[in-house]
Image (cartoon, rainbow, N blue to C red; front, side):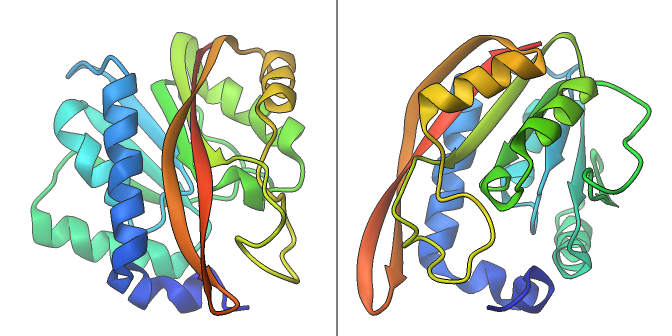
Length: 203
């Protein structure tokens, strides 16, 4: 299986993936009451497509990822777009020191299912949200493992009820789930559909 660094340069060339990412970005925009004075933090930003869509509605977005390849593509996209309110940073919250500031809005999209210790990452992300700040997750509903296929070292999506319990234990409240979109992905020569949820809550 290719690493994200190896995939980075061709990441944005997948039309099906791009359509899914735009649906995710629009779902986040629709579900969150943005204001121009809000600061945001995206964990697992990839090439920054979601953040580029959201940036006109926010004061500033810090974009974190542990793939240097993805961040290089993102830097180039920022340069070409003349966006001035986005700051990419290399960061793996499971191993690196966390930022010393808090944000009005923290979000992550299709990232958490790659992280084994969900309880720990949710507690870390909670620390990044200011009091009464907003937290949003878009990720896979529970699936049979077809999304990534054999050899994937992560979670095959999440059960919403079980995920809600983990969020509460991490310190979040006012938790709500909605259907986000359907991801189409070709696996083993067959086009399969996978449901994604969007979860919004407060600290």
